[in-house]
Amino acid sequence: MNETLKIIENRKSLRTYSPQLLSSKDKELIVHSAMRAPTAGNMMHYSMIEVADQEKKERLVQTCDNQPFIAKAPFVLLFLADLQRWYSLFQYSGVPEYCKSHNEEYMTPQESDLLLACCDALIAAENAVIGAEALGIGSCYIGDIMENIEIHREMFNLPKWVFPITLLCFGYSKREISSRKTTNRFPKDFVYFKDTYDPKSSQEFEKVLVDQYKIKSNNFLKGAQNIGQHVYLRKTGSDYAAEMRRSVKVALRDWLKTE
Ligand SMILES: Cc1cc2nc3c(=O)[nH]c(=O)nc-3n(C[C@H](O)[C@H](O)[C@H](O)COP(=O)(O)O)c2cc1C
Image (cartoon, rainbow, N blue to C red):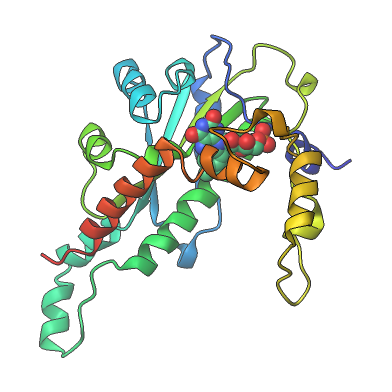
């Protein structure tokens, strides 16, 4: 198989790292891979912060839903959806005054800009993941970085139009990466449609969740009666999801606040 496709096929999230550090050259190659990603209008509405400080990593363990492996990752990159860079330029360049004198509406970043910036940041992040895999370095996304927005803003000195969309932990595996099994996915007919959306029936879901996700009826949480109720409790109804909802609502409200 083609080498790139092999890397994509065999990638798995890595959460246990060997103590081996990444060389500066490899870190540089990972950051460069991120920066070569496609970006909307070539505006690069994202930034990265390397979290090198061990105390900050330890803090992230707590603020990202108690995930101890974050502190053990030798290379940690925070990906930010970043409208601040362009907005600052517009301010420096007197765009608000220009708009006023030319009867143009001056727009500060809106919801659409945030979504586009999140696209840029996540596409860059995935390029970093694939670049790292090509160097034999594993990784894991931490979506919980969207929680505790107030703390993360303070920790990383984030300005108003910067939103932390994902964190990536990188490191070498303790054992041969190829010996680990890749995780199952929904079958293709659940995620790939032609020309029109195809909603699935309850029976189709049930079969897939038992076959692919290996959920057993004797493992249901808190008296759940079926797989749907169980998955809801584990994911959407969980404490971490509640904190993420709260935190993102705060971030969105602040994003849209006019000064
Ligand atoms: C946006 C995003 C957020 C994620 N957040 C976490 C996380 O906080 N903690 C974690 O251990 N894994 C996290 N993951 C990794 C997923 O759990 C993992 O990709 C999924 O279970 C599939 O496994 P695989 O990557 O090995 O194929 C995240 C992945 C993505 C794409």
